[in-house]
Image 1 (cartoon, rainbow, N blue to C red):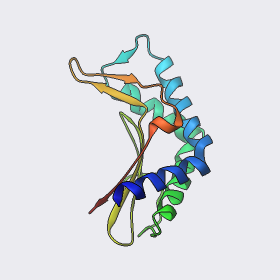
Image 2 (cartoon, rainbow, N blue to C red; image 1 turned 60 degrees about the vertical axis):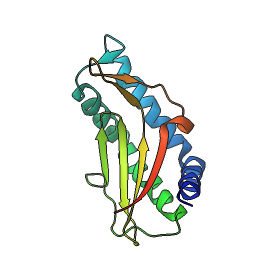
Image 3 (cartoon, helix red, strand yellow; image 1 turned 45 degrees about the vertical axis):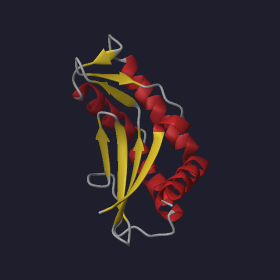
Image 4 (cartoon, helix red, strand yellow; image 1 turned 90 degrees about the horizontal axis):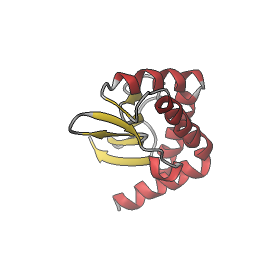
Length: 142
């Protein structure tokens, strides 16, 4: 049942916000193109420019619109009004993440996985994802 809901959420977000997801992928590509090597060891080299560019392009707010679509696809409502700041929107070293607490106390997480972490030595690499491969959704009990 949970897998069906996750897939429904994913389909709805891609159907209504594919351009936003594609734009986020493009921002990730721009960030990684600024590096002199394929990887960077410092997560700040990912998060700082990524957050700055997402905000400058209005994608932080657009991702919250996608989160609203995701919430609606669960047939639930959000317990609060998501805003473009933690705990609802955050930029991690792997990419942006949006979270909503549903009215039944479950958590809905929409993650756009742009970067991967190599463990030894620790380094961040751009995944060069397409919208279909970057969007991940999770619904979990609180």
